[in-house]
Image 1 (cartoon, one colour):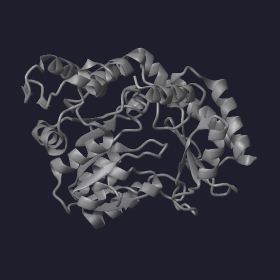
Image 2 (cartoon, one colour; image 1 turned 180 degrees about the vertical axis):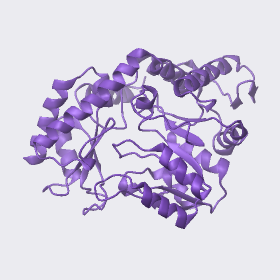
Image 3 (cartoon, helix red, strand yellow; image 1 turned 120 degrees about the vertical axis):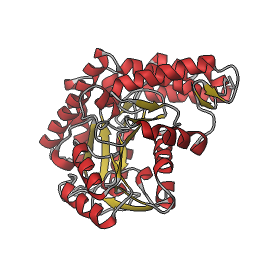
Length: 380
């Protein structure tokens, strides 16, 4: 290996080993997942799908992709799955292409309220190709389903997107289904942040309500960086698979698909379910300490791995606090809050997640002490 790369790799190993990781979208994959992500599967082109490849020599590619699909279907109790998306945004883009035409109306969660770029944000392809509208949260930070219904009635979207990257509470998938049915829209659920908790039975499964569900595999699911699509209606299979290949991607990343298979197998265990319970417990332990130290939390708590701290009443911005925490060996990310008085660059929030450090085996007392340290840095 080139010495320059080795030096950078060693520095990153050192950073990860000596940093407390609280970024809600990050985790620590198992040794097996990481070995597969760097395995000889990276050497093989496998355009197409199992038993329908464009290249010869793909018999073992077929085996590992079919294994990944079978484990994924078992994990979420769904009928069909595509494990080829390179990332969550690619999965969303493919679903849009499968069901929409350029200019069609979509309705997703506003980025400033906790939504994701790929749900119709103007700088993203989803906001450029389609006519995007958004819904937000109420003054307490909760989704207001009556208001979402009113927006949907006014907009008449072809597709509604449910899911978020900075919303800590339970999302009522059934309510979204009712709204989508009312206006005749398809319902896409992006469960990227919650997919691990859903697999572990600690967050509601959207598959029986959504037309299509997308996710990443590297957040609470604790796998390699990548995306997935799952669905139940056989009529959608050709559309979705065709929208991935050849619609929006070329050759699948077979080394990543192999690592995904391992990830799904790991998530199909009692140990993973126990892990998910601890992730939520640890998030709530941190919330208790923040409240004791007068640190405002959006929605006053969490139902997931995620906590969004509101700094609008504090002296320092989310950017300043995130930088200060990093100086003290704690990694979080700045985050906007609803009706943020500060700019998108500064923000008035920080987002915290408990998934990664729970993977490291930390529990109640450790997280409570950590929350005290963070509180002191914020209030100091």
